[in-house]
Image 1 (tube, rainbow, N blue to C red):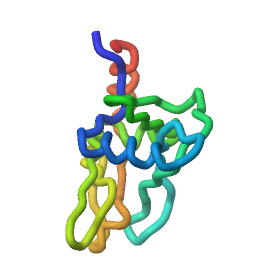
Image 2: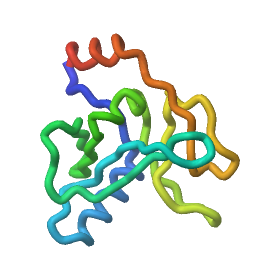
Image 3: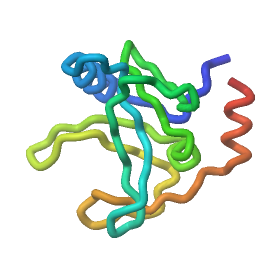
Length: 126
């Protein structure tokens, strides 16, 4: 039986998280959340974690630590976090099954909550 994880992260995302943490004194990882904003209604937030919150869901891959804010878990359940570096953009990307649309510039998204029953069952079986 595997450990429950609200999200997954790719190797590239884990590499970038480790790079961020290595350059910040006292950093333990990053924290993902969501906030209201943008033309589509919601935006992802990424913050540095210096003191982990025991209420956060914790995901670890190869020494990269990501914490998910409890109020965001229902909107991020099943999301894959990646990192991309292109000519036009560098940053984390999210393949989120709960995303129903995004604005034209890609900075904000419309998210629907995941099935609460499915989230509870996934946590219970892990």
